Length: 140
Image 1 (cartoon, rainbow, N blue to C red):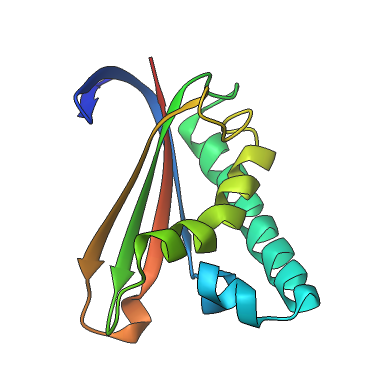
Image 2 (image 1 turned 90 degrees about the vertical axis):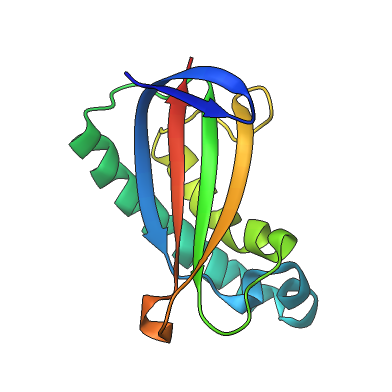
């Protein structure tokens, strides 16, 4: 267990699970307005299922056996070209967070469990490096 400070919260880390996803612009706030609902449903299911598989593996690797009762979600976007705005990034990773909930990392992603929701960006040189890391860290 290590001590961290998120938004001036003095918290004790109980473990962390991180997955890597490729976001889809159709799942952003603006993309949702322009995309057919069947396409959105299909993409959401695909991203949620992929996140579930990655999270189950990462959870087992980290030795986590029970869902975190309190957590911090950190989203790190590695971008090239034009970066996604914060609300678009939040929308596009929602299926990944739901997949992590399905995997039992946390019971739900509501504010009584998620104590902080942090987003950050890092510029990369090539489009091949573009990705988003979604981490859920159990805190106490």
